Structure formats: C-alpha cells, structure tokens
Image 1: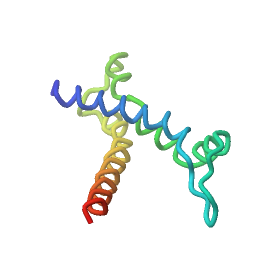
Image 2: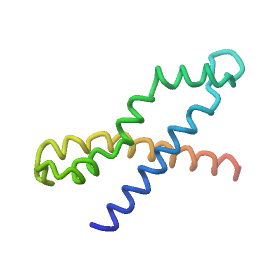
Image 3: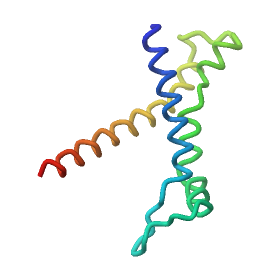
Length: 108
C-alpha cells in the first residue's frame, strides 16, 4: 500500500506540473499558425480541459484521510472521489501512444 500511495503522490505532482505547463503550450488554430499569445492560450485552456484536469489532479483522498472524516476505504463516497483518476489514466495512455508514434516516425 505504501508503494501505491507513493506512486499516487508522484502522479499528482506530475499532473499538477502538467496543468501549469498547459498555460504556456501553444494551441492549434484551424487553418492558421499556432497561437503563441499567453492570454489566448490561458483563455482557451480555462474554457476547455482546465476544470477536468484540476478535478482529476486534486488529492481528495488525502484531504479526506487527513481530516479523518470517517470515510473508510469501503465507503461509497471515498470510492466516488477516486473516479477522476480515470481521466489521468486515459491521459497517460494517450501520452504513451503519442510517444510510440513519435518513436516509429523517427525510426522510419
């Protein structure tokens, strides 16, 4: 259990860094050059995936455990709080697929 907690904390930190980096990553505009202005990037991210990223990264389980609110591992609310982690898992799978694609292109 200690190893999984450690990995969960590491992934929370990494996804938190990802949120910060998304505010500085150029966005694609159809039929145009990538948008590089930070204000436009921030507005686009806030209107898009920011809320989902924030909810999936926020450590609800740690807060519930630290406040000892009577939520055990078997409690339905505790399990419900863990649902946003699925989004993080999907995001990791997409990143792995992109990395494999890039690797194949570079080898070609």
